[in-house]
Amino acid sequence: MGDPYPGANALPAELRPPPWPEAPASSLLGGALSAWSRVCPRPLVLFFDEIDAVLGESLISVLPQLRAGFSERDAGGFPWSVELCGLRDVRDYKAMSGGDSTLVRWPYTPPGGSRRVQREALEIKTWRAGKADPLRQGLRQLDGYLDRFQLDTGTLALFDQRPDAPAIDERTEITAATSPVGRAITVLRG
Image (cartoon, rainbow, N blue to C red):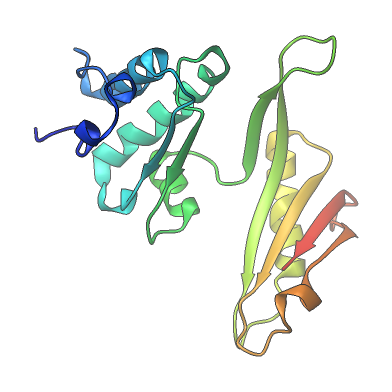
């Protein structure tokens, strides 16, 4: 394996990652990022450029390790933020890793309360040239996800990519809609 941290020597010594830990491939990246986060004196923020060059089993291994490490973030045991940069749509990554593109989860602690995980259903649709407004299709699809996730409400984001679409500041809006089975849906248009 080549240098796992190319360019790390350009960092000040106290910010450099430790050697890669001994671990099986299924947890090697997560273990390395956790080890680096614990010794780095600053919050660690990483950009994985050209992540879409990682394919097959390797990609299926990387994404769950990043997802699993997220819960350790607040305790300083994982990078504060990880950006996946590439040409592929995020939903492609999720589909390849067996994840679901419509359920967003994040931990939070309400004032005076115990740690919880908030769950939100999100469907993203793109309105392309020559196609109908995807609102109705998105509402139907979101209803199915809400049934599966046992949620009462959801969010539908519609991105207008038509060449003749109004300027972004003219078309951006947040509205309410009712799904085919009667659920309250927040619709974001942009």
